[in-house]
Length: 370
Image (cartoon, rainbow, N blue to C red; front, side):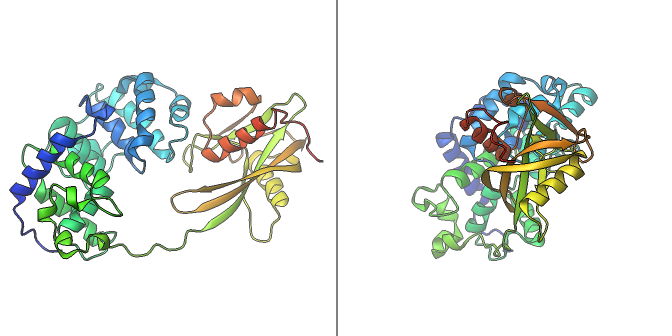
């Protein structure tokens, strides 16, 4: 990776001046309380600003301090997080709040090293909190910053390679202006979000276009360099809407240490090769809850994509025919009326199944087709 040959002082000055004049009015920028900075940074991981704003505002209204968050049940935190995705963030948020409240007197560490010791905080988030909330001279490196640096310095290597990421961190650290890390870091991230975008960057209105090597060469659309990703795998998954005579439905809570941990779902699982959907569902329910079911009519299908795979979820109406549910491969289970399901936090896929049930007039126990 080439060493910077541009005037770093001038680069710092022009970007910080642009950010001061054009910074978006976002709710987490109105108060540099470390709790609010931390909360916003966790929510903004893998999530667009426009999506985060209403979640952030609801979260702060419900949990105005780190102590309030620490004292809340995890189920309440997950419910408020419902729909934001990447639920490990919410679980780690709750864990970290408890560490800060119980072990640090409600005060966040002011250093990168201290912040890194908290659950769910990596190098980027630690640098963002340290620089924005405490004024520390710490760098940040997220997708937006990588894109800006790759273009400004015409980085030809694959920015996903470990050695290149290490060099990018070193470059980001060299660029931090002493005493102004906060506005510099936020300016870089804002530039990548609204000007130096992945496609069709607005170089005409870029405050640092004069320093950009890729812009000078006309190859900004070719930076950053990324190797093609492998094909995303796809899985067929089943879900059982098991009802009893009073119309209540059986739901199960996922183990906290697994994907989507702590969320509630209609029980089921992934289809194995050569297995029918119905056989898959009977096997999964037996393994998860220790009961036998009869599989009835299909309710519908849900397509959904996660970070590393995609699924097609097939939901079926089912009836319990033998046994009493046991939490064998789930954290807990319960029977709930359709109107009571809103009290539980569900993944997006299961929320869509609930919507299908509501669209059917709420008769979740009818038309089993058995």
